[in-house]
Length: 193
Image 1 (cartoon, rainbow, N blue to C red):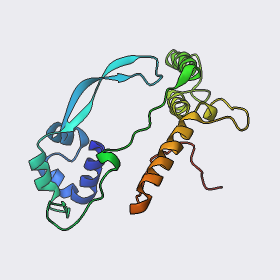
Image 2 (image 1 turned 180 degrees about the vertical axis):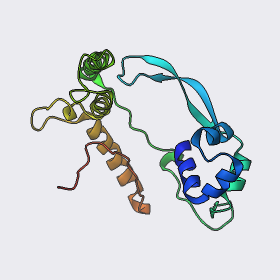
Image 3 (image 1 turned 180 degrees about the horizontal axis):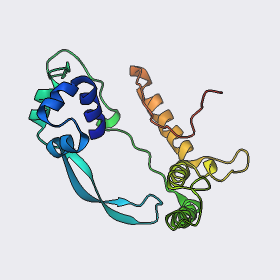
């Protein structure tokens, strides 16, 4: 979980303790238990890279855990405990990589132009904003048809590539009743309102 989520849980369960220690505000807590470091990351519009300082890791973990374990019941699975974890297919997570193609590259340029308009305040926030641009970029990275309506029945290359790999693993692991977990939170069915 993120550093902020950890802090939120501590505030919920341990506000008195945090106040006693003088770390009940996020900045004080983060100065004690988090390390902010600069790192290279892609710009929100996808047009390039920039240096950005973010919290990158926990520090003083033994002290943090000493406080947290006052309210948390943590169970760590140890070797020889009798609890078995399933093996990963080929002993590693399966990643399906797919080329974005020329259409995606062109769309990223459009996103960069939109972002420049937002930064220079040439559009109103209710017309376009960085959240919309970032969301459109994520959708386009999954499949261009999510942002540029395609003709009916056009192939979804990345989804099709994933489906091929899922089918292969399914067939390979069928004798042992293999299970797959696939994460995708974009373009998924939503409940009707």
